[in-house]
Amino acid sequence: MSQMEAEPSPPRAARFSTRSLLYIVLLVTALVYLPGLNGGFLFDDFPNIVDNPGVQPQHLDPQALARAAWSSPASDFKRPLASLSFAMNYLATGLDYRWMKLTNIAIHLLNGALLYWLSLLILQAAAGTPPTRAATPGQERLALAIAGAWLVLPINLTAVLYVVQRMESLANVFVLLGLIAYCQGRRDMLAGGRGLLRCALGIVGGTACGLLAKETAILLPLYAALIEVCVFRFRAIERRYDARIGLLLLAVFVLPFAAGFIWQLRMVLHPQVWVERDFTLAQRLLSEARIVVSYIVWTLLPTPGALSFFHDDFRISRGLLDPWTTALGIAFIVALIAVALAQRRRRPLLSLGIALFLGAHTLTATILPLELIFEHRNYFASFGLLLAVLPLCAAPRPRLLLGVLGAWWLALTAITAYGWGDQVRVTEMLAARAPASPRAQLTLGESYLALSRLAPDAADTARARAAFERAAALPGGSSLPDSYLITMHARLGLPIEERWWTGLLARLRAKPLRGEDIGSLELLVACAGEARCALPPDRVAEAFAAALAWPGPSARLRAAYARYRAIADGAPDRRAD
Image (cartoon, rainbow, N blue to C red):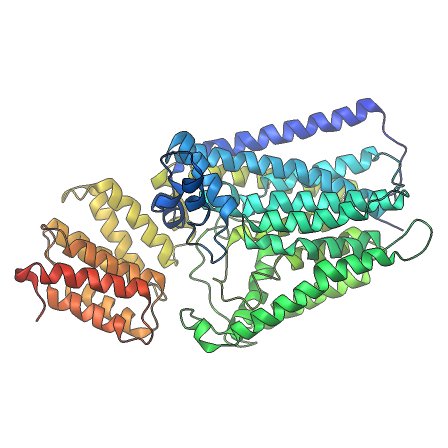
């Protein structure tokens, strides 16, 4: 028996009531997020938007838009549609982060409405509702509950208020539209209509458009295949199996994914790919088992400390028992897969939800040499968890539990959105949530430094120094905190402590350079170019020597060194020996 029993078709008033509730849910979501508009830019917003002249066109003309489309440093694929949207924001309101965040909120609300539509189609298919019949009131209420919960899930906040992650939310507009088209096409086919073309266009068109915003849209064919396997089951109107759907999925999913996997596997097996990471391919796969399980907890039972934005303090798995939760995480994921397979016919929504959640992480939690953890990677994956869990909450007690959870999700999202509503408040909140994260403490120091305007006696100057000191003392961090301490004191004309130089050099020599380490050298170069910033030339030269000693120095590092040599050669009083 399916999870959703057929009910009589709802009267028009009931359907109108559900749609009205959807509008209310969208309005509540907007009100929850609006306090976060004033929080400014953060972290990767700077290289992608603030410091990227490509997305800051002065005029609306084809050449400027073309430059904007291909200006993103975030990916080799450039994500042109997302970059164009930032450029359009800039043309309308300049670098006003409030309007950029408001655009993100509008995209999130659109996705919420699309998710309601998709959920309704999936619920109808899972219940075996005839394609010619409207959704039942129970199906509409459940679809509304799924969409409403997804809209206010705390784990989805960074895909909304973190401006640059419009890339993720915008890509999912096309993912959801593509899946809706696929489900509608399948219903048309089961009603005797010509829905195959709609299915094909939904997958191909949604994927192609979504890829222009972010590469995660490449998973749309996988999602469609999982929906087919779990709820439509390749059914045909007059026979048990529709070969056309099998051939379509073979053409747009199986063969392209197999080719892509082989292509990526050849790349990731090359040791040079992992030089700038703190982990190997094997360690990444082991670590992601724990991380994916953590995502489940953070989605359904979130706490402020878990949703800390910065996760660079995560302990990498070095073996199955190092730490021991690695083996437990792998066992849990295997158990989830077993449940999904075993429940495919009896509880298709549970099976599909698990499959969509795990499927959503096949790109970012497997073999690609990406950073290990980001909360926004659950923007679509969290829909899978809700689809698996919420249909089980039909009895009175589970509904009460769901109500409590919903209130907690709403409250935590509102609290976090309020924290994101001020440039300093957000960095203080994130540093408090992640006290062991070097990046969190560094970002807090940068906020205080910006407030201090380098006034020697300002309280914010002292706070900035304390935050940089905490960041420098934490294991696993970059050399940036040391560079900030050195350059801040040089500009203030205060003594530079020897331990900062020692720490900087030790980190540059300890492991291959990351982008943050090159950024720390760029800080030294910028300071050396200022008349008031007296850095010892021998120390700066020593730092560059440590960095350049690593094989294959990047173009960015070589450019930084060239700028420093030009400065040093043009200032005899600071020339290195």
